[in-house]
Image (cartoon, rainbow, N blue to C red; front, top):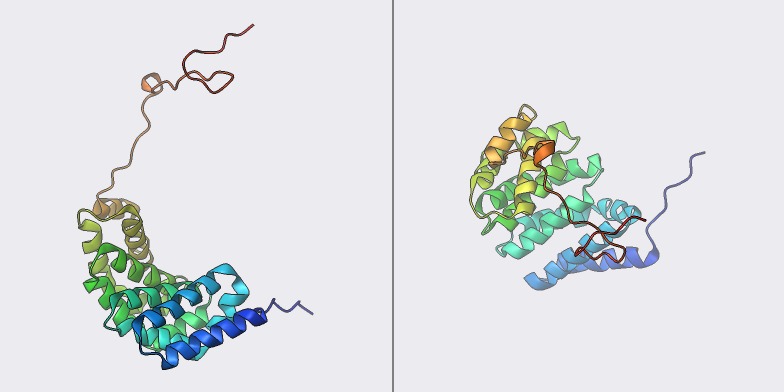
Length: 215
């Protein structure tokens, strides 16, 4: 018989239950955000934790519900939690989209107040679409918004990478060269051998002032 996968510890089970109660009953956005943050931390630490959280359908439904909250920071935290919980769990990805995650994630990607908020939506969409053809098709309309994000000036590298990864995931026919063109990246070629800059000589003590003499 195959060995049973390790289960989440009792402490984790209790913590997840407390998060669920907060998500169910609390109306304060900051308290809801703290619960979502704790779920992110627990799911990220160990696979058994992530599997346990993914089995709590109420948690998934509430996180999806708060993707439409009027406070953007809470929407971003819920997107982050869903992204991590969905990792390598196809059934969970399906349950998230069935619970209504598609529209609010697309809205956050389109209307987020800054590149980081939009990038978190892109990361979550990328996670939900990974190895999941049905979800990939559901998010295909996001390609235009991803291209727009990539074409903007002043977008930080991490946000740009997240948007590019998501676009590549959703558009299977997008060639790497086309993606580089959209991002505005130019592949750096190595200089010819004769023109490569020389590094400083290394000495015994890591001093670059003078080379070590060979005896």
